Length: 156
Image (cartoon, rainbow, N blue to C red; front, side):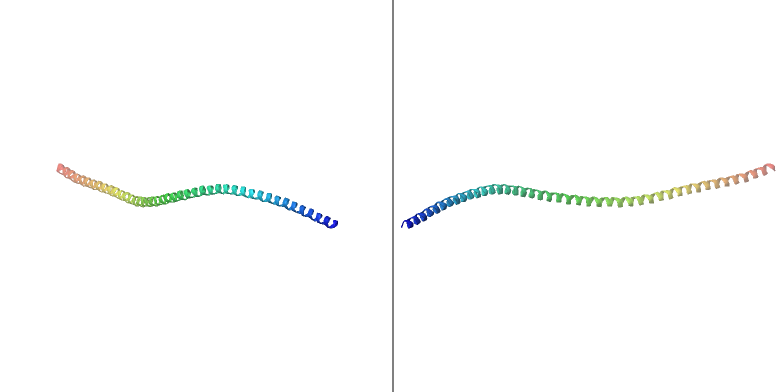
């Protein structure tokens, strides 16, 4: 019976140690769980705060993107307007070039006409001069005849 009592004591002592170990282990597990819970809570708070900052950054980027899209539309409209003006000016310049070429041709024709008229004027003057010279030659011949007649009459 003493050996049964010693055995029971030994088993009781082992059971106490097991309970103490379990309590200690349970306490450690609880402490670990609590630490993990606090760490998770802190992580979630940090994540939430950083995600709020990221969301604010996204909102700011989105606003800037909308502003850039608006500016892009305005610039495209201005570019289209400038292109239309360029095309209109190109048409005006081409028309001016055509008119200039036509005017140049007309000026060439007029210069030719003036030259022709000038030449005709010279020909007319020359013709008039010839006629005058021929008239003087005729007058001279008439005067020569009269002079010859006068000398004959004078000789008689």
